[in-house]
Image 1 (tube, rainbow, N blue to C red):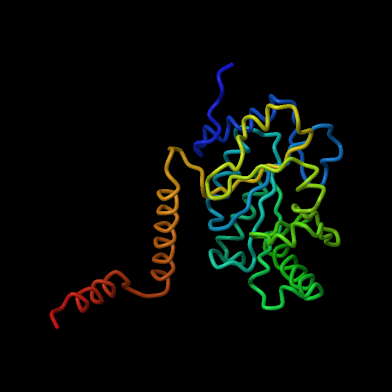
Image 2 (image 1 turned 90 degrees about the vertical axis):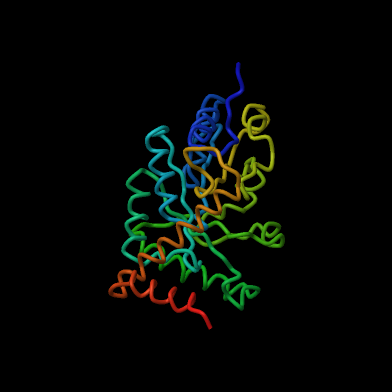
Length: 256
């Protein structure tokens, strides 16, 4: 059998990856129902930069693998997007309309008291409430943003939340991640080996697109998209923004 391309971060390769998972005997599952299946595969996405790109992935998954319910982990305290804006709330709604679940992507470095267990849990509870209100959904799972080694070793248990880095999901499941647009292991060999009865696959929607690109080009696109979005926000606030920018540029280019 010809080995399918699953690692060039195009939509076609992502489809190949999901089809390979199913052909290798796994059943797509969620954090809530994985115990029902003999060989579950949980697919999760950390939304670090763009809710719009997450919607693109959710739409693609619904079209090519309708039985997949992925979990999309959303930053509440990040600087890239505001979950309470009308646009963001619509994105969260669309992800769910495509059949997927919303999870909390928690960044403990946003808080000065991140080493205090009681304060840590209070911050998680606060963000969980905010996310459930914005998404109009019950959130049952949490994923740490860039988890520290001591957290990975702690098997931390959250009340009423599945911790994606708990012993169950991080050690008992085989964990595959495309962090920094690179699979840390040969994903094809892992999936087809038959050595791992349970899989947890983490992807980041910002890395995927129609055409194959280098990581620097993907990042350049994200930065350009952010610049365009910032312009649109300013255009809604300032009348005749274009002419104001032209005037600023004229002053900058004027001889001293």
